[in-house]
Each structure stands twice: as structure tokens, then as C-alpha cells.
Image (cartoon, rainbow, N blue to C red; front, side, top):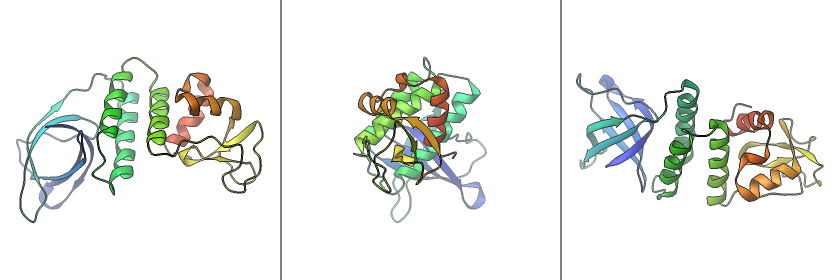
Length: 203
């Protein structure tokens, strides 16, 4: 089997609980500590096998981590942060289907040729659309007042007036195009930096 390591948690005696995104689900499994075991790195693609154990988590074994196609530190850091965010998003919905796995593979491919912030913003728009949460509104999410040409953007790219939210100000016309096309090409680099802060939950 093959998947992407979204997160790991240390437990007693250096054992690990490992969360792997497969083509059909978020797999929660147990890796017993061993001196010959490689260190499992969040974000890595992994070939693996599972041994099913009654009344216990599946045991992870026969692992082989595959090299990612890029070596840039900023890209690797952003990819690992995205994997952890995706884990937080999926941890209560482990039977998540193939969409998220396919999206991650698209991201991995695009990160080799495009700016990583734009890649993640485009992917986030696709994720929100898949979940039915990608919507453009003329009105503030909180108070329902009609939005001006520039408005504040919040988590999940919800739209607010400046009285209800004090975050990142974005152009309404450009945001509408982004939501319709799921492409960040409309934005200038400084706008991308701002939107990426919202996406990565750093504000």
C-alpha cells in the first residue's frame, strides 16, 4: 500500500501512532520502536503494510519512505504544515474517500513547477468547493451588511466587513474571480502573501 504521512505521535517506549492518508481513508496505525526502523517524517510518501490485530490498532511494518521531488526548505516546510492542517481537518472523518489523497498528489506535482503559496491557495479553493464551503457573498458573514470593494477575509475565506473582522483586506472583484476559477492567478504577489497567512492560520 502507499500513502502520505500526515502526522505522528510518540507513545510509550518510543513507539508511534501514525496517521497515513491512503487513497480511501485516513489510516490510524501503530509502529513499534526498533533500532532498524527509519524515522517517519510528516509529509513523506510511504510504501507500507498493515497487520490487523484484534482489539488493537493495525501494526505498521515493511515501510519504505519515497523521496519527494523537491529539496527546497521553504517548500518542504509548507508541505509539512499543510499535512498537519489536513490531519486536523480529517481526524474526525477517517473514511474520507479519494479526494484528499488525489489533491495531495496534485499538489506534490505542482510544487515542482509553481510558486508554493499559489499551489496551496488553489488547492484550498478546490477543497472548500468539494466540501460545499466555497461561496462568494456580497454581504458580511457576521452582520449581513453589504460589503464594499475591499473587505476582510477570515478562516475558510469567509468574508467580513471591517467592523466585524480586523484581519486581511482583499479586493472583492479579485476574490470573486478566484472563487469562480479556483485559481490564484488574478492576485499580485503581495496579495498572495496575505491570503497565505489566512490559509495557514498564522493570523
